[in-house]
Image 1: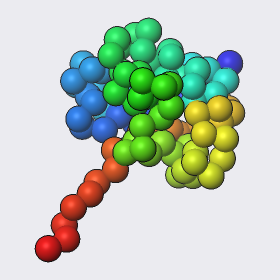
Image 2 (image 1 turned 90 degrees about the vertical axis):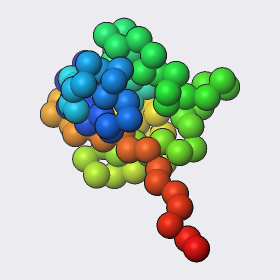
Image 3 (image 1 turned 180 degrees about the vertical axis):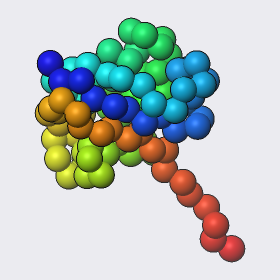
Amino acid sequence: MAKVKVRIPTPLQKLTGGTSEVEGLGESIRDVIADIEAKHPGFRERLYDDQGKLRRFINIYVNEEDIRFMDGDGTRLKDGDDVSVIPAIAGGAR
């Protein structure tokens, strides 16, 4: 089981006690999110829709690589990986 560092965006930090980084354990992104959910209830529902799919406006990176170009939330992890959860930003057009 991999131990990874997960960077939490400001809008979700209220779920992690104001912490910008948490440790997660798991073999995949899905496992790590479940691990964080066990410690910080409500975290998973902010990332997944009712069908169990990652929400379109949530971007997750492993070592700066978008998991959409890997195996999605099934992306395998190894000890020391750096995971970033980043909400998409829209707007700015006139």
